[in-house]
Length: 202
Length: 101
Image (cartoon, rainbow over all chains, first blue to last red; front, side, top):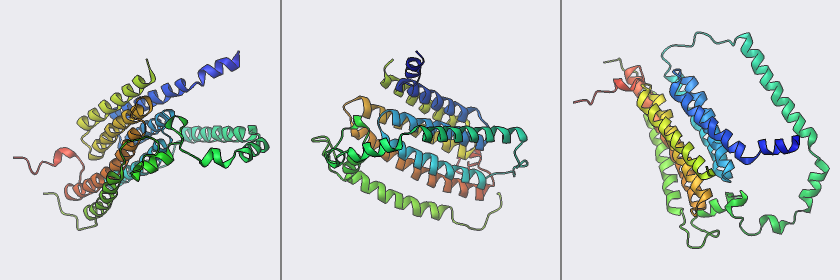
């Protein structure tokens, strides 16, 4: 009874709905919050949920890239911009006692979750299962996207080879253009943001 | 409602939120966050069609390119915002009206 309810609740569609709702809520939060730092936080919620949506759509590499580049890179860059262009320094630095209690509760919950997960795994059985997998079934051939292993076909597609789909276009030229574009962006951003004498307001 | 429709609704919602954010924020970095939301809405559509249509892997390749371009755009736009701040001592985009006729 309980197991069947859990199975319905924890179905992929539930997670899909959850990620969809939280990404939409994060986007609304970006619009309605006034402080830049709060906007950045809601953007993290929204972009992280979009990464979850990507994982639900079997796009494992794109989801990981979304987490690494957007949530890890772009948002840190944005928060840097917030810091560098803040007009007034933040008056209150230390957290209130309530926030400390909530933060430690969240940390303890996470610790219990990780510890509970680790203690439930049957490590010898897992090791035996890994040892029994033959190399031919893991490294041979190309799995289709429905299996979730998209990294190898994506890499081949970026090199202009499409072993997964006959006659599909390769992406070598866009890949090279993107690399040159990134180099230009690097030089241009460094040129634009270089330190120089501050001019007075006209 | 099929899964594809759910993805497309989320993509459309993110796009609209980004457009509203770009239109209503006067802070330059707020406008940048709106652009990020718009690009993400497009990315959701790409990945959804890569999963639920004959597009297969091509949609994911496009999504990767969009992510790369978004990162590059954020870097350049932030450099411009810093430059604007150095010159105007604010990042209110309404103050950038020097070229107004």
